[in-house]
Image (cartoon, rainbow, N blue to C red; front, top):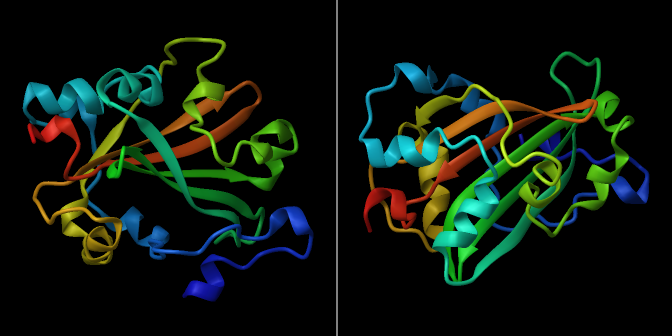
Length: 196
């Protein structure tokens, strides 16, 4: 499973830059019970974050004392349909030492050919790039409770996160110029959305 998920191409720029404390079962996320955000009954304090259409990075910077990004991995994943490989990046956005967000970015090789500067955006929050030209981007979110995914919950302790339920995440497609990305963001247990 690990070798399949993180099979890197031969070119130096395509190597996986880091493989520490990773969530490997990325494809298993498709099996969660995803539902449209507009049809999900959740506390208003949750939806205030989960349906936010602006830059999550900018929103976190307003709430965090010291927002930082930890790059977990970045590299190529073979596509399931064997049509186009997918570039993936996993990060943690932290307030100091407390991880608040786990983020996964997926974009096909074909899409990256049109916006190659995304390849150089490794150690910075993507929000600074994606929302530089527009403070809000229309998008439709799907939500899921990640506490239902055993593999994801098992890695929380390695990131220094307490085990708490629920554990809400969101995903969406986002258009950046001529390139479409898929973003998945999980609000980790210490995130202020949960009232901690």
